[in-house]
Amino acid sequence: MDAERLARTLQARGEPKFRLAQILEAVYKRGASSYAEITSLPAPLREALGPAAPILSLTERRVLVSKDGRARKAALALADGLAIEAVLLKPKPGDAWSVCVSVQAGCAVGCTFCATGLMGLRRDLTSEEIVDQVLFWLQYLRREKVPGRITNVVYMGMGEPFHNYENVAESLRALTDPARAGLAQRHVAVSTSGLAPGIDRFADDFPQVSLALSLHAANDELRTKLVPVNKAYPLAKLAASVRKYLDKTNRRLFLEYVLLSGENDAPKHADELASFVRRVGKPHLVHVNLIVWNPTRTAHAPSSAANARAFKARLEESGLSVTIRKNLGQDIQGACGQLIQ
Image (cartoon, rainbow, N blue to C red; front, side, top):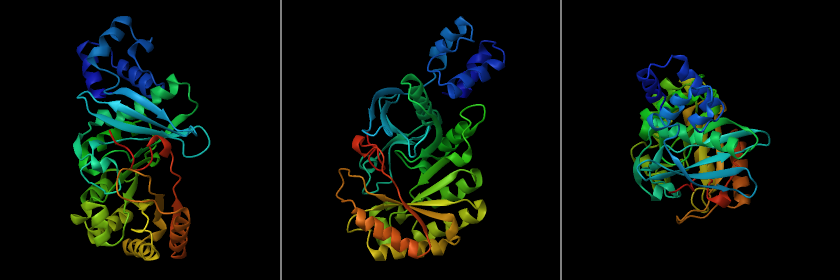
């Protein structure tokens, strides 16, 4: 929903100012999917707003549900015919759901183990298209009578958030605006493949929003092979930006590390990762998320469960905080690195 467009439409019709708050509350808090559902509005206004200020800028193509019911993946069509995917996840028991949003159709970074990277970049998403993924899932929960509520949003879907900084920033402001979604900033996380200038800017603009860094290797030769953006922002530059981020925000940083069999999962790679964390300082503010690679059409293989446990144990011996992330939605191609349209 484009709130500014809605406000201009209401103003042009001479509607009282409270109408905007009335509509935003119905859409963002109650999951209204059409103006017809907002019966507190006069009937002529409900009829006029549909074409003038649509609630959603995207339409559903299909929704897949994982066997365990803890993940749902939606293919969503954009107005120009392109499509993206967004995921609804339940990481823990209870009524809390997380939404994983995409920020681009495709991606220009080209990480070798990521299905989205095979697509190349089609275009950036607008801030409205990013926010509307959350609204879509809010409407879905209500329509399908799925128990629970959306408490967290992670920018970990298709695309690199800092390649689309302005639209991502505007969407963050919308999702954390008390008059709209009203999410706590600490319940929102943005993941980057390592664009150092973006990290610097993000620390200034959103010091309370969580930051995740997709590292995947802690020596430049290997990281450049796996994550080509490392050519522009090698580990020394990245470490300097991370150090500034930690000093400025005093917030926990999440390091994402996909384990690839025979490529980055040996003891020496764990030692390199521990060394990188020591280099950035404040290791107590760094948490490592190990991710066993989710199969895609790329030429890699997942690290074994035993190897993942050994890698984790070696990092813990170095004093690091580490978890092996539970991969949700792999059976619907909705897990980390599997999104593609």
